Image 1: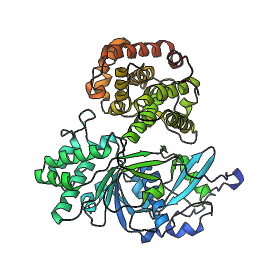
Image 2: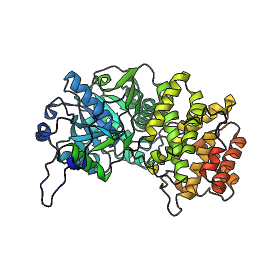
Image 3: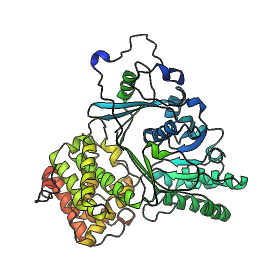
Length: 518
């Protein structure tokens, strides 16, 4: 979904500046009528909303995606039952900021020097889970709450990336089994909240994962049932029979909060201060598996309901997320600090396009014209300089992401006899980061749940190093033609060390120009 942009640009003479001692008004419901006409805002009174949605993970993505889509749905229908209670799982920073301004905040959708600016008022309450006196499980069990949504990242599910089952030795899971009424994991919170619903004989909420996981709803359902089985077989059976966990696919590139966002928001808001603005691209999609029960008319806010999200999910994971990994690891090794900077490099851009068209694309159920349109759109999105996607954020937790975003397609291509130069370069660059991230001037910090055990595998011989990493079935699964893949990854590692990123890439670009057309 492409959102209309406000095309006016702020000149330096129009910028608002704080003078020493000046009192700057804070964003609040009372300030809404004083905002410039160019700023979109809720077409409902935020204080009149009823909370019908509980969201776990009150980060920037949720506020730029689901909360904004919910506002648009309520704007169009006038149905005010879908206010959101947004839960911060760890730090209270965003809770404090939003509470100070009646839970309002600004979205800034940037592209080509233009912006669409909108104040969002769909959040009715912000909750800091560790200090919440009511408790998240009791909030889940509130009869007014019809839907629970989640953006807690893959690690929040405590699920093995290989088996898809709950990792019962996870410290958080162990804590929640021992302290069921004060859980600290999303899985424990859901299980306890659904147990309260069961005891009361109420209708359970629909639980919608909005995280980048394969079959995210099915994965979440399995994890919650696995957790319930550790406590009570009857609870597990009740959840399996009564609770809906539809799969969904989300897509919007959201920028981590930057110090400049507050100044940009203040300029657009006519001098009004916002402590919690969020910046994102205009593009947005949300594909949700159809389910029974009440819900906002999210389709009026850019969502679509379908019978099966699998094809949409694979396209997102392999084209967008897989290519993000390629640009992050190779771009990081080359010294680029952002995805936009890496994509501006002709060699990296050519490999990214070739990777999508010749490797990831053929594994998807997309007609050729649609694949080309999607790739063109993604390349434009990657190049957006207004969205600073830093390499650490995109590249973190690579060992958890490797199978669904890269290895599954790699396996399909090997079995079909198609070459995989992009995938092997990506894996080599990821391995390279276990040494490159510690070098002076490194642009990407190494963040990975298996960092300690993987760093121990680093070997000065590139082929021995590739062999050691690729034998990790918890990361790569069972690869066909493993020795061939190990050799190609080892060759790529050697070339990255000896010749640099651009030279290694150019040897792997298709000679016919199809994949490398930028």
